[in-house]
Length: 195
Image (cartoon, rainbow, N blue to C red; front, side, top):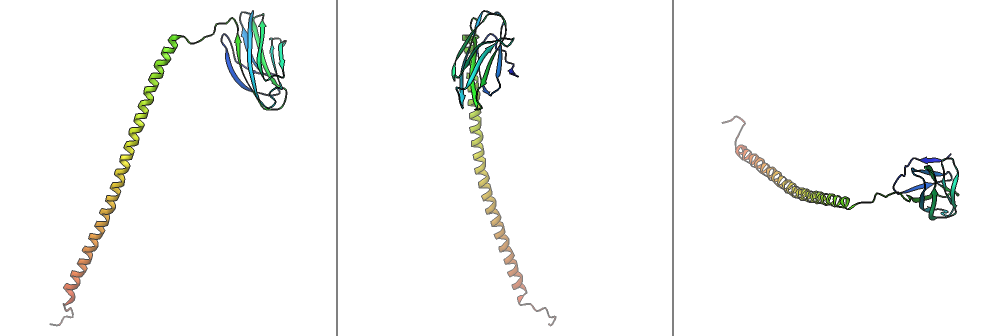
């Protein structure tokens, strides 16, 4: 059974890439008018690139054109009737293969970009560029601010260490002084109760 990728390729050319296996991988395109040429440009990469089969089939399964043992090229077929047509890719070996391809229907207008679209796109790109510059400036400001805060924190930490050391030193000096004062105050006193 064919694996059908439901991709409607109507009125414009498309470029796709897909892995192919021993089972056919098929895509469909609809011809609404008939009397048009369908062109499939393809390129296959992977192991045993040449061992592939590409076909264009009608709705009833009739193979209109078939190409085998090629790794790149173009398949062109005149579609007389309107309806659904299938483009199928099949690997003829077990090797891993990827096919890149695009569809094109002659006689169908393409939707190429117009100059108005380019000016709109240019405006959007300018706006995006300004936004990126703003983000960059904000990131630099935040980085500078973080660096300043880091320096301030390190200085504060050093000041706290010196202050704590000074307090401990002062408390030790006061304690030693009190011990000495009390010792010398009571050194010559007699507490035995004799007068």
